[in-house]
Length: 400
Image 1: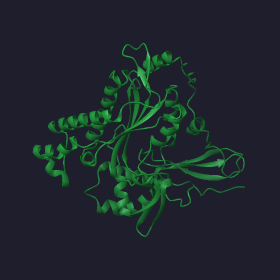
Image 2 (image 1 turned 90 degrees about the horizontal axis):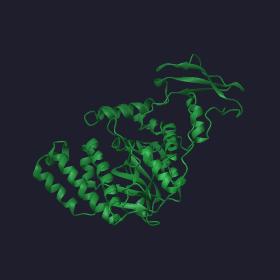
Image 3 (image 1 turned 135 degrees about the horizontal axis):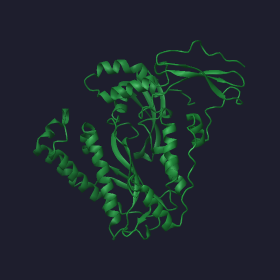
Image 4 (image 1 turned 45 degrees about the horizontal axis):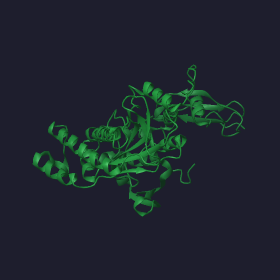
């Protein structure tokens, strides 16, 4: 438990009704849905069950979770299962981390056109990596990679960027060789940056011509073709931020990294420090000053506004796979990569009967949700369930 014990849900439950009333015209249906889900998560509003230890009789209430992907408390099992699936796909090669970032001027357009522009970010990034990788002057191979969208910075402002995790090599055009990149070096960042800029701006202009972009408030004038062209013109001359981090220490470090970055929300409960006097304080890293840990204090309404900046369009896929890791060809091409690298295929796990989610969580993480927190010996078993909006028949009694 964190020293403060503060959770995002605590802030939303206290501030949510007044915030919705005062921002009724600005909130989207998706943002309202996220607020409501987080407020109700792990409360009687979603129902739940009562557990009792089969050794000491200790009882506790377990309320149901909201399962919303923006909730900081509802991603653990989903993340653990996703990581287990990725474990079977790892190869014994260097892995690289490449980040593609949109300039702030484009991020402003992206906020008003999330589904369209975020999709363009994925498409331009994927085409950039695959084009440069297949170029014989650089790698000359078909690569596979995972791209993960983040829309926030440490200060919770809108900062859309893609994290790409890429094995250091790929399949030759004829599929007969594994072509490895140079040790410690994947692809030239400047070349990636300039192609990414050109491709993205071309795609954005096509989206504008097709009438796919909408502009409101401060950007309303961009609806005119001339104004839109003038707005984008400087973007074609500035350097766009694309950077590659040093390679990971090995495939297992890739999983460790992915565990931190996938199924992540704009702010974790662990970063919250205090909620008092109408302000929210939270920890953040100031990357402009050697990643120093600092505490930022915001008016509570501004904190909620910043969090809601990052609510994704309904059904939008923020983790995508490309190249020989794409879903349609993953099995066959991964097998070919293993053959060329002389790596045995992972042993398939027998398909057992469906297990309780707590069994699956323990299998994936090694952490037991069954163990009694009171005596440490018994198992917590369900003795009563209750529906949404109800409460247990009586308050759980602790028996020692």
